[in-house]
Image (tube, rainbow, N blue to C red):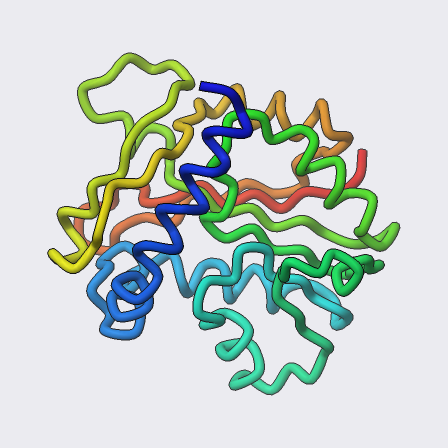
Length: 202
């Protein structure tokens, strides 16, 4: 499949599953988010200096609401179809489980162009080792079937599994350096749930 076809499939899947996803998030049915990853991205945002923040692929908008509830009065926005609203510069850009395609370099370069000179890009994604399962440790397309999130999801979603090395290479090729790397873990098992990267222009 071409990159354009993959992108169209991802968008179509999210459209079909939007209501089920919103219900799962608001109902607290996604354990990893409930026990670690939501708090991790909120804390990472709160460590950044105040200023305009862009939440790319914001879903139902929970992150912006959570930050506002904690007293931050910066200007927040969500990524919308009208790209002129996202021109920036942004002090913080957040991609929280939002980078699902195979070729990330063009997207990352576009985000870097919209970032303030002293700004930060925060990327949280599935941990490559936690999501490996029985597959080979190699970047490749996979399919999310939502079994752990309830039975209301209409169709599986394609997403691109990426090794840690390929994350580092994609960010480097886009002109970013990794300033901080975190691995939020499950409080009971101690196993990593996500990879959280704070990146700045290299």
